[in-house]
Length: 478
Image (cartoon, rainbow, N blue to C red):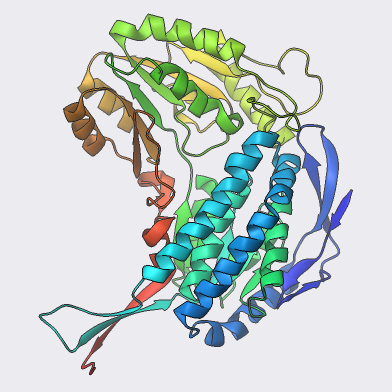
């Protein structure tokens, strides 16, 4: 078992003051694969103090210095790419090829993207030609608490750490205790590149102890959190006491609207996006809304697709999904699958229990429910597993109404060959992102949602600006 109990604080690996430990479980084997420390208030305070002490120097480094360090980090990341992918496969069960191409790949893509935006960003600029003596200055928000989830561990860590570094912030990262190993490799790379001591700090632990100590610490100026809507609400309450800045990327229950003029691959593409990463993506299109004239055909195609969809050992190469993250998550998904059956939805593929031939690991059958209505729990709850709910609709107006009838608003999907319909529906669905005909969302496009899906945006220039305050100066002289 891998011993990773130490924390990275003030430029060095240190033993925790807390003696409590957390076991990291490989979800494919149900066996412990690593042990990490559980940071208490004293550990968290040490990390925050280190970040606070480093801030006054780091905040006023030149853009060129920060670019140079991030470019070195990108080069080092590429050298450890395979190690990062292997860690993600072990800690959260993402299949080998998926870990390499997408899980580790998104981390590299975000580092590269933020380097580009940092190079082009103007930290000082005039308000406008009408006011030559008025200046805008963009300054780092301060000491940041970065709290990341287990489902896309390196993607989410790089969406927070890289813009924080680029902006001149200092930080304490708390990765998910379920999948912390890839983040600890990133800490090794930051140490290797020689970022100044205290700029980046990492502590491990759970939300109740470590997360609460971090988000309530009086010297934290900003909290950037990705995770459940419930946890996001609690963090907002903590932050409100002393007006900490907050960025929250929370849950989703995306609608995928399949119009009758959708392209021939739209049905299967939508199911793949739902099942990918074992359904553990906040932006997964878990509600498939299908126009009635092609509804029966769609259900038959989904049944065939789901029954042929491969579930297998994540250490194997090839196209398949692995397990879900934990026993707790597995049991939650099983309960919701049974709830769908009890509510009267038609189970057309998958269902309760593990896939045939698999006896260990938290593996879930790719599951499709038809004849779902939007009042059913499976249509309203973020299941976070490979479970697709199929809902019929009569016309464009009804499709938009069903899509918007949710507390979430992260990503919606539209499948049609009519460009005018694309424009109409894209404007009316209430979500931070809209994916049309499988185009995807660019790596530097603003990522975030409406309603209960969060506050703020990540990635690209919008993600960099999340870590900056803007100051107006009157009477500036050139």
